Each structure stands twice: as structure tokens, then as C-alpha cells.
Length: 477
Image 1 (cartoon, rainbow, N blue to C red):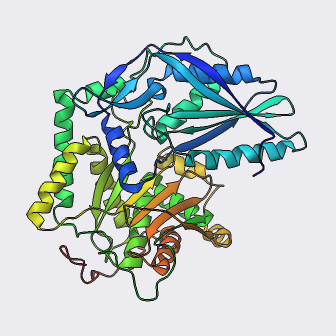
Image 2: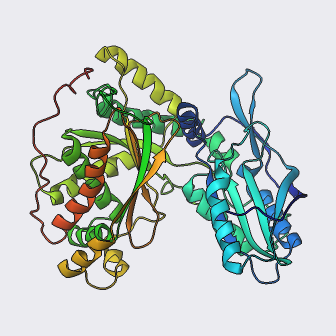
Image 3: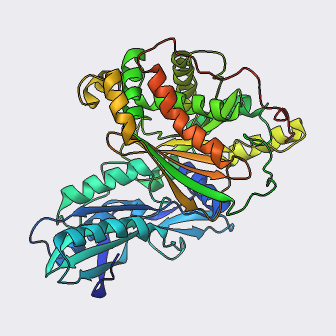
């Protein structure tokens, strides 16, 4: 990525209707806890091409209006009178807009590629949550014309669903005035306040009963106690991306046949592949639930998504039966994914005392695809009818890319199901002291193998042995 010929910054004024101080929302507590444990801020990047003739002033108006309309973008962390962490939303203020001028000798495709590269790299720069606004934005200027907006958004301000809503607003608003009101939809302070009410406190307590049942008999860590093996070299934490058009099409075929949405079919495929690669059963994993199906949360700009937990067995059965189990387990998990993380910490501490050892679920599956695909949509999502011959041709397009090391992880495996068109794309990060590279490759390729085997065969077996990995019972490694 080349350097811009010039970098400038202007100050943009903003003003909104809502302001005040409240505790963190449950979603903010959850993501902040993840940030502290992992050392990763999980910031999100975005970009879009500006209309022809756009000016710096147009870009500034878009930014001003966006921040004015959404209280979460005017939020910073603070401490209340008792010294507890809280969020403070400003009614008005100033935010910087960077102006990056691309060299004149660069082509239009070069400018677009620079915007894409910046979208990937800019979120790596860390926010100071007590001083910075949770949004950074830049406008790219090429040969005198403003071509793109690029931004980085803190996960403390929004989750993936909220990010998509902000993108839609940013595109639609154009040069709308920054006087637009916050009114008309719940804002982040409204959510924080509602979570202190008895009704939602009771909802959190009901969720804890589900968590307690799932966590009571788990091992100390999902894949056993980490241990560096003899001769193992290189960084401890690694990552890879697996992309399979064939697995995507096979998943659609299974979804259509079983009447199950694509997200839950994919969860079943991943769980079966984990079983094949590791032998662990039953499998307890964390799953991310967007929570936007709940009344009043669909259009909230805030981190609403939270982890839930599912347990199901994949051994000595069929893939279709695992799909059914995943459907039932994830439905229950989804209903129990809105809770106060502080309450969950208390439950986990109590369970650790009762078991006699500390335990946690150290495998997470996060389906980042923007929409859950209903079964009736599955038939329209692929290029016509899915056939064995089509799958066989698509297998040649499978790729596995080793992405290199990570600095830190607080889980043994984190599997992201990425929102990429026409492929099943899995980005996995793992602890090499817990899973070998060979196991991870077997897991990734196993997702494709399971999907293709079950695409046209409702009796396709999981091929997972009923035997459990030795040494994973109780708290032993």
C-alpha cells in the first residue's frame, strides 16, 4: 500500500439530542471483558465509494450528521461517583476528519485498492476509550475529487449488526443536516437504563439457569490443558482462513432438505468436523447471538450481541441428526443470550467451587454472516440446482491460507464464519499448545468433507467415534 501524497485533518462539529451518564450495557460489559482478556480491541473497518462530484465538505456533513444522530458515537468511558466504570454521552462536540490525498499518478483502481487496504489496517490502531470518540473517519481525495470514505469503529459502540445499520444510514443520509434528532429509536443510554429494571434483571437470572446447566460438568478447558510438545517451535498462537465454494453449496442443499437455516446447518458441520479432528464429545462451545430479534433492539446502535453456550453430541449418529440437535440447542441458547456478564461471573465462580477446579468454555464459533438464511431462501441462493457434478467441480476452488501468528488469545480456538459471498469462509485462530496444525487443517477440511458427504444423503454418518479423548474428564488434562 503506497503512502498518500498528503495528509490533512479538519475539525467537524456535531450535536445530538441525547446525552448523559449510565452504566455500561450488558453487551458493552461483555465485549470490554473480551478486550481485557485477549488484548484485542475488535475494531471494525468500513468503506464506501462517494458519488461523483463529492467534496470534503460533503464528507464532513455526512460525518457530522451520523455522529449527531447516534448517541453511541458520542460515547466515551468514564467513572461514576463511586469509582465504577460507566459511559458518558456528550450532547455536542468536535471530531476529526482525516483527508488523505492519493498521488495524481495513481490510477482509479489504485485509489480503490488503497481504500480497501486502509479499511483492513486502520482498525488495528487502538482507541483510548476514555479520550477518543469510538469512530475514526477519513475521506480519500484523488485528482481533486473525493472518492471514498473509510472508517474504523470501536466494538464498544456497536456490534456487527449495528455497524451495518450505521453504514446504511451513512449512505442514505448524504449531506443531511447534523440537526437530525436522536428521537425515534432507542439509543445506547436507553438500553443501559432498561437493563437495570426488574423485568430485564429477571431475564438475566433466567439466562443464568441455562448457563449453569451447560457449565456444571465441563472440563477445565475444551481441548484439554495446553501443553507445549517436544520439538514444537514457532509462535504459540496462529491463524488460518479456509474458503470453500463446494461447502457453501452443500450447506445450502442440506438447509433446503432439512428445513433449517444456513447458520444452524453450518454450526452442525463445524461441530461434526471438530468431533472428527479431536474426538471430543459431547461438545460444549460458545456461540454469538445477535439479540436483535428482541423487542426494541432491532435498530439499536450499540453492542447487543452476546455469547451463549450450546452442548450437543456428534458421535455415532447422522449429520442430519446433528443438524436437528444444533437447531434445538441453538434455539435455546439464543433465548438465553441476553444477560448481565457480572451475574455470569458469579455463576462461574460458584460452579468452580463446587467442581473443585476452574473451568471455562474455550472454543467459540461466531457466525458473522449478516443475515440468517431461511430454508425457502436457500434454493435461490445458489447458481441453480446443486448437483454432485457441480460440487465436484467446485472442490477444485477450495483454498487454505495460513495467515500467520497472533499476539495473544484467551481461548483455545475461535472460529469466525465470515460474511463472504458464494463461499463458506472460516477464519480460525487457535492455540498451538492445545490444537496441532494438523488437527486444525483436519478440522477445516472436515467441514467441507462433512458438507459434501451429507449434501444428498440424509443418512450420511458423522464418522465420529463414541470414545472420548482420554484425560478430558473432570479437571484433568
